[in-house]
Length: 430
Image (cartoon, rainbow, N blue to C red):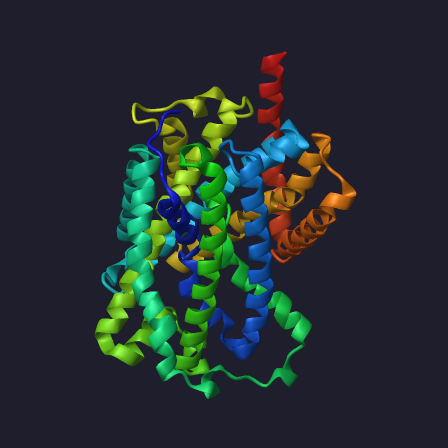
């Protein structure tokens, strides 16, 4: 696949842009009840995210092919595990992307109030977002990455203003809670589960590896620094908003960042932050659509997905994979368009979260398993690698359990549905 290559900054923007999406703008309201204790959750989820970022950074130097977690899982555990990760991850992408498209429309409601009440109008706006960003990706990886760099810059400025200048309006009484009314262990688990959603996308730069210039160097740097930067932005901005708005008001807020900006800078601030939230969703949608094309394309080239997904257009973009994924995404939206925007978002996001975590579990163990299969593993030399792998595996497993047994059951059913596809592909090779 011949594509124009992208460098460090667009790759880092892909990582940060996919993480700093729709989730961050609602987190302060979700965490309000925990006050300053929410820092425990950020500490746990941030540590887990950095462990995963370091894991992906190391793996990207060892295994430089396209596919990210899928490629690492296949290299370490074989074809079947690679297929399971790719199948679940691909479905999570177009399911989660449908939710991001809906969140984009929801964030347009301050400018177009009719989107709240007119389901046909909101459906049209949602489909325009899906197919507009798909069209950008059909032009190639470089164009998609450049669009991601622009939208990341546009959304970050207002967020960084709140994360810095916002602390001038910070009030301790808005943020502080009595820790004696909580079990700190429960708080850490609950807030970690809530905050980790914001970190999904750590692996973004590893998936289009072949399109990144000097991948051994740039993928690891983009993954690590994109995650570090995002973590700092998350903690600072959410804490600032939680200290600006009174807790009762914050818990009832549908747009906490915009409400905080309105309190500081008036109606202008409200609309600027609302626009940043919409741009964040659009940028995240663009970045995740890039991945929903790259994953099935790469797996098809390896013979583990139907050959249909391996077709390129004249610009080198995985056209069939992109178009079919966006058709399925459109179907998800059409099936639920009569519900409210909030209800649609909730229906689609839980399963997408679970399916994103499964590749993290496999990737956590992939490096030392791969070294062992290559005959290069030595306990005396690699004990720290094993320790880090076990800690990362434990974190990702705990995060999966945190999604709930109903979601886990639905996820297992989703993976079982892929088994006939794997069996058919293996039968074709006999």
